[in-house]
Length: 392
Image 1 (cartoon, one colour):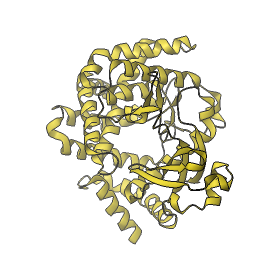
Image 2 (cartoon, one colour):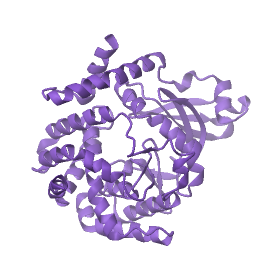
Image 3 (cartoon, one colour):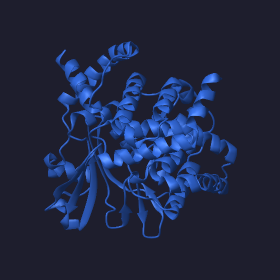
Image 4 (cartoon, one colour):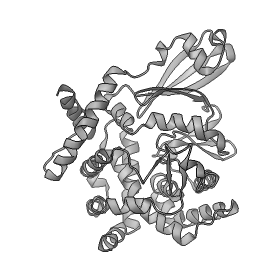
């Protein structure tokens, strides 16, 4: 019972204030309780991994190095958000590694454990990364489970430029990202490995923790709108209601048609730019087997300044399909445009979940994503699109 109450407290903390005045949420809450209790117990037993407490011998084994090569090494904590981020300085090798572990914050760690975010990224570097030709960090060591993990990858701080969602991306940078996404998707389009060694990759046919997703989506929408109401278009609450009403139909359509490996969180904060202008991708925690247009839609709506999106979204979609065609993938522009509308709802949901949280992103970043997504929903007349979907 204590763990059940603790879970409720942390859930309220996550969403700031949740009023359960809708009795339809009672059954999902009851069904969620055993899942929450199990994960809470596991998190109490398996505390977040502190890299500083890893022995030199164990660290050498993880990095496949001799213990003497680590002489004088030091850990530096950089940031704590959806993950805790570190740098490992190894002066004897004149090298710096970048590391990710579970965050210490209970709520964020609970969210990450429930959706296997750390395991997804470990799986990506273990099974998939070597098969891709796009820019991405190299991995040097992986260990752990959903509650306690360590990911050691290449530190790119002196080789690339990093941003966040509040950054005003320009057209040249946007085109570079579109090219990278097209290369990523073309390399795994309808890949048979998703039915064998990559079967663990999430897809719409089986949504993990569907009950929790339903509750999270509904409550986050209300909280995000209330928090940023003065900054959002007037029809945002109506669109949010329609998204929740027709979500099952959206899920069904997201799972139909040709699919590929998607990054799943393709906003500009999870990207970097090399000196030659090429874009690379970071943070592979929510990879999936979906329409490639999910990543494209997510990037365009979430990362482009509104005026740039309005002027160039069609150009970027056509650039994406043309880059696919050069690699033997024929995605019709009309289909791509339909999928752009289809996945716009997903972008708004994601922005709302982030904006409702107190721990996932800084407020300016969360607000920027939600405002851009809400303005895009209005521009794309998503209210009409969703209403028509409901009539079918």
